[in-house]
Structures are given as structure tokens and as C-alpha cells.
Length: 263
Image (cartoon, rainbow, N blue to C red; front, side):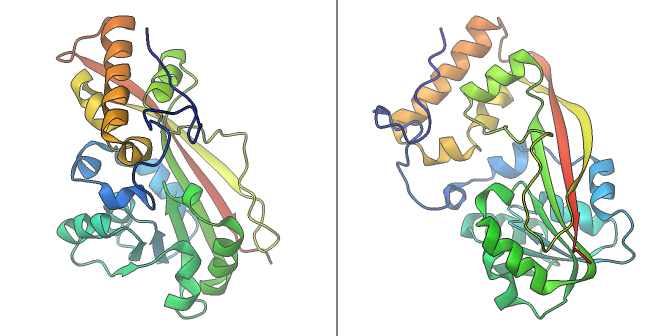
């Protein structure tokens, strides 16, 4: 039986599964597994983020290892990247040395860039980490009139019951539901959603490594990490009857929220 453990931050979390064995940004602890096992973004989702923009200057905020940046650059977009975690910046520079990369957070963009520099600020897999009010205020300063803020989430499709339980066992935070519209304040028009459903085939063994790229795992103590992996093995191998050598199709969907600067 899978023990889901206490919620993040619970005072009963003796194994520090949800607590912070290491504080601060968990992605300072990320390794190369993040780049290898986190999925890329569907081409149609990337196209949607840029739809209607001609030769846009774009900033990928919280760029991580550069997965979304790479997709933008492949389309000939003029793109820069911003990332606070040193480990992520190192991975980014190894794979995308030609892309301008800046150290900083979303809340820093107005201090780092001149007013009206960008046509789009893209937050791929990073919006939930920011101070929303401060990030929106800063974004408005560096966006052109007619520019946009774009929020993108790749996440496991938890409308499938087995995937919903998997996300809980992995403590993956795949909770960005299509009916929850981001609140960006009066400086932006109401965000519009483009939703893309897809899937990825991967070995069951890869799910164990994918789980290790989640912030909950990176933050956990050594015993917490063992607890998470034991839970995952119990669910996949005992409850679902899978073996590590076989492959499964993991359903995903990608949410693309587009919020133009208000007139």
C-alpha cells in the first residue's frame, strides 16, 4: 500500500518528505536528470505562445535548463533568458551558449532591462515560483505596448485517475487546472487559454528518475528521498503491476495562458 505522507510543511512530517531539508530554491540542487527526463514542449503550444507576434523579442523567465528557450530559438525568435539557480544556468550555458543568459528573478526584470524591451515575457514552468504582484508590475515596465505575458505549464494529465494518483505519489505539483485563470491585475487583459493534450512513451524505470527532478524530492532529506522512491515503487510495481523494463504512455497536457498588456 502506498503511503502518501503528510502534506508539504506538515509538522507531522518526521521524514521531511514535504519539508525543506535544504532551504531556498530547490533547483540549485538539480542535476542533469532535469534536462534529460523533463519533457519538451509540444510545437503547437510554442506556436500558440507566439501567435500574432511578428519577429518578437522574447524573455524566457525562469528558463531553467533552457527547454522552452530552445524551442523559441528554433523558430528564429530573438530570445534572452533569465534564471536564478546557478545549477540551472550551468546546464543552460552548456546547451545554449549562444543565448544571452542573465542571473535573476522575475521580480528583477525592470532593474535588468530597459523599458519596453520585449514583446513577450514567457514563464514556462516557473510562474508558481514568483511573487505575482511584483512580477506583473516589473513585466509591465519592460513589455512593449501590444506585448504579452505568457504562462506555460507542461504537466501530467491528472484527469486520468492513475495519473492523478501518480502525481500525488511523486508529489509533483501537477495542479494547474484549466479552470483556474491566473490573476494578473489590471495591467493585463484577462488571460486566454490554449490547451494541448499529448503523451510521451517512456520506460517505467524512467519514472523513478523523473520523480527525482521534482522540487519536493530535491528539497527532501535523505530519508525523505528514500520514502518517496519506496512509495513510487510500491505504486507502480505493486498497485499497478508494472515492471521497470516495460514502457508506458504518460498522458500530458500543456496549458498556455496568454495575457496581453491592457490598452
